[in-house]
Amino acid sequence: MEAIEEALRAPSVYNTQPWRWRIRPGAVELHADWDRHLVATDPDRRDLLLSCGAALHHLQVALAARSIGFNVVRLADPENRGHLATIDFGPFEPDMADLALYSGIARRRTDRRRMSRRPVPTDHLRILADNSSRCGAVLVPVTGETMRRRMLAALDEAPHEEHDHVGYASEWRQWTHRYSGSHDGIPAANIAHSARAPSASFPLHPCASGSPPQRSIVPGSGSGDDAAELVVVATRGDDALDRLQAGEATSAVLLAATQLGLVTTPFSQAFELHSSPQRLRRDVLRIPEYPQLLIRVGWPASGATELPATPRRSLCSVLCVDPMDTSAVEPEAGI
Image (cartoon, rainbow, N blue to C red; front, side):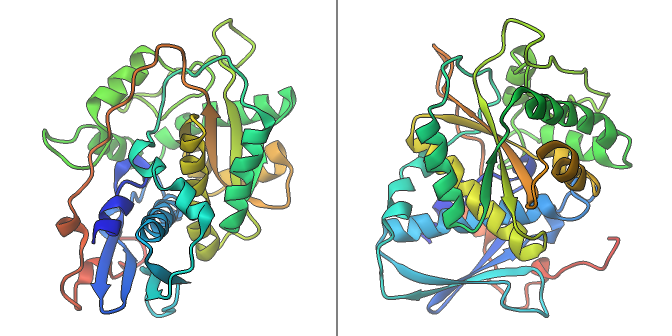
């Protein structure tokens, strides 16, 4: 139960925390919480699966730190697509790579602020790529001025396209205007901070009012650009298993970056429309793999203060205590 509590620190789209956990003798099950699916923002459930995959990897790291052996079976129940993984306990075989990531769980933050102009060493990027590879994904650096500009243009256009989708603005408003004391969603303070000092090179989702966002400054057009790198988590396929493993790889990359002293910002908005990943794959990255998520990584800016942890739901609120609990049952199509 302590390990699951630490898994709840995983990042998720809009901090929706779309997961449920069931503890049974000798195993833990991870289920999707369909009630927290963002139908307008995430129509094909890519973000939901990425979020749950990140929580699954966080759990593996937390279990390894407690010398608890396990075996992960992903998507083991073809009759229940909401049952994403079963973690069976067994003999402990230490994974030094997972153990090395453990302290990053408590320290990792999504940092939307401008980053330092200090370049990220190639060796550091290689470490991040190795961690992604261990989880079955490829980490593709967005290198070269042309590719970088194409990617930033796609990021800049995505919020405008999404804003025209029915329900998108209301979902954004719902998860950025949580009531006082809420344990999910994006805190208003984080939104305000981003609005006061946005990263000129990396557009975020539209403002909380639901009005169309302002276009962002492209790197090279101003003097305030930082030296953050862009990397894309990509997989060889694009089914539910690939997306779940992409979430695990995202967790590994974020925790490894934290251990190296780097700060990170995951970006999903350019991947949320049905056609967007295909366009990025074909026109921007030009790779055979399927892009799943973009991560901005760099050194914290000089004088940057430590960000507070975003809120999380309690363990009791995410546990399935009733074997007939229907919250983990997939809704009918279109609901």
